[in-house]
Length: 70
Image 1 (cartoon, helix red, strand yellow):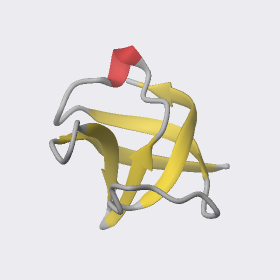
Image 2 (cartoon, helix red, strand yellow):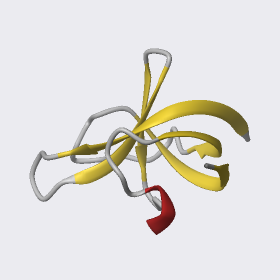
Image 3 (cartoon, helix red, strand yellow):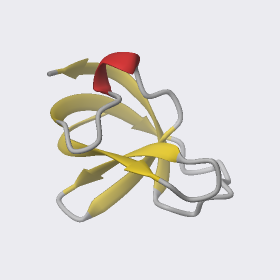
Image 4 (cartoon, one colour):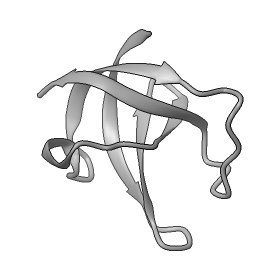
């Protein structure tokens, strides 16, 4: 588990997906909570990286959100 401060991004590639940008590190979020689904929103989140997973988006490291503060 990793705690990061990040900016929420909605990436409009293919059908679109949610991501986090944190100090140059990019994460493709697999379970973005509805409360965070706002492009440009700053948040603190606890994530778990899923490095063994493949993604068609190839945006960043796949991750799931375990918790967050807004």
